[in-house]
Image (cartoon, rainbow, N blue to C red; front, side):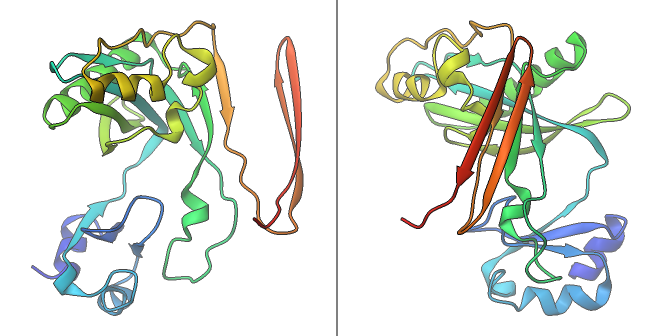
Length: 232
């Protein structure tokens, strides 16, 4: 079946990605018009039809959620609290056809997610089932979409510590990194619950000669961060 046919079935608005060496942050092509689809497949990022492609429909979500899930060598599974992830456009797209990877990087994580309890339970259940269907002892990051009508859609699963779990270093009894080691070494999994009422993570990314100030107002704390990116 052609990419044009796929896009028709998926209401046109979709994205094409390489089945290998790609992620949601880059090596994706937006299929907004038929005249761009065929030519985009032959470009260097996607590598042509021989590399294998998959097409996904755009999801009309209202929030992006994530759950860090740990599975031990004994197949025990523990889930961290559901968080909300916010993506902020850092730069414009370099080329109109491609999604610049800097545009899709997670910028803010709010833990726990400010959603009703039933949504948290549903998100945790979806994440648990997703990891249960996979193999391996490790930490998994399950990315989810919350739709306007309260559905939870599975976006993707990253089989590694994840930026949506960096807050666990300070906010949870067992960080995602400690948990990852416990899982792969066959130790008993640690406590994934939060030891603080809430936490916010800002993913600070900079480029050469970029200066900015980030002010976080989180009563009773106000944190100001000034950063200048430097070459290393």
